[in-house]
Structure formats: C-alpha cells, structure tokens
Length: 250
Image (cartoon, rainbow, N blue to C red; front, side, top):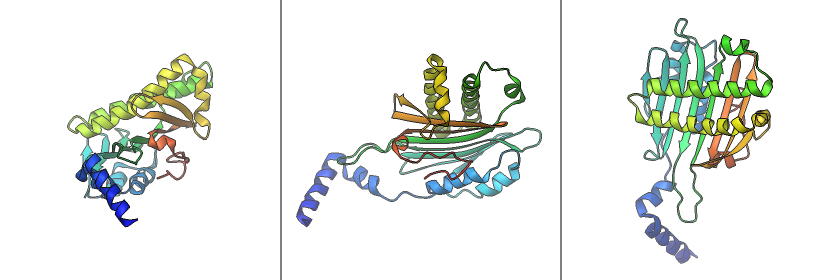
C-alpha cells in the first residue's frame, strides 16, 4: 500500500509539477477566512467611525492598508497570489461614520490531478441607501430590488476604483465582484420577476462565464441593503448566510 501511495505521489508531481503540487496542499499563511469575515462584522453601519475601523484593522502584518479621503481598505494575498482578499469601509465624508462595508475572498488555485478546482469568489457588502433611492416611486418590489442591486454594483466599482488606483490587486477584486453582479443584472433585464428569488435560501442562482455557477442573496431592511454573492466553488457549498446580519460562513 505504501508503495502504491508513493507511486501516485510521483505521478502527481510529474503531472502538475512538484512545486505547484506541494504548494497546493501547503498550509496558507494568515489571516484566516474567519479573521477576514470577523473584521467585516465588526463594522456597524451608521455607528462605526473611521477611528473604530482603523483600530480594528490594527497594524497590518500580512496585508496592505490603503486609504483615501473617505475609504479605508485592508487587502492581501495568500497562497502565492492565488488567494486574494480585502475588507473595505466607506464613510460619510462629513461625519466620518461608516455607510458602506465590503468583504471579498477569491480563490483561484487551479485544478490538480485527482483534485477538483477551488476557483471561486465570496463577496459580501452592506450599504446605507440614499434618500433619493428611498423616495423613488418604483413600479413594484422587484423593480425596487433591481434598482438596489444596480446601486450596490455602482458603489462597489466606484469605491474599489478610488482606492485601487495604485493597487492592481484591489482593482482586480473590484472588477470580479462587479462582473458577478453585472451578470445578475443582465439576467434580470430580461426577467425582472427573478429578483423575487433574492430572499430564498440559495438566492438567485445563475451561470457565470468564468466560475461556472453563481448565486446571490439580497435583503433590504429599512434604509440598509445587504448583499451576499458567491461564485464557483463557494456557490457549490451548502451554507449561504447573510454577512452582517448573522454569522458569515467560512
């Protein structure tokens, strides 16, 4: 049996390259996904200040801290750049109180022999909706949901672009999140009634050109919208919670 295992290991190394094979199974460095999600939950919209967020982010050891006038971002990569992540908070420019928060994890490790690929994206955000949005007379609830997702997509791209001008990794993560929501919006443009599935346990499921499968949940509670989107390997897992309203699943 030991000889057979050794033979399989040699074959795997020859097929995938020893360095990439052992790198695939090597333990990744910190922070863990749980720590990344925990930072997201610590920020409370309409309560947390910029001082609170910077204190929670602390002195980065395994990440890069980026700031603009009203946005703070903590981002990094693990597994030699095959796993990217960021936490981002956008503040009201006058009061410096949190009005939008984001968390993003992308795993792009390729398929290895006998091992299914882990490529996928897990994205969560919460935003305070504008007075203009809240006062708009929408035709029905589905139209309101579609408009909310359009606003989330636009703000996500705007915020990541603002702090991603000198950080190509952050810009790429923002584009990946935007592409996923853009795919959903394209699907909704032909069938707006599908927006009613946002509240279902698996959300609205859809096909994605890069990650095969995706799913998105959204909830509007008074003036706050919460979105959770998963692509690829993340979308194939059983649990699909709402980050910020409860435990964000690892």
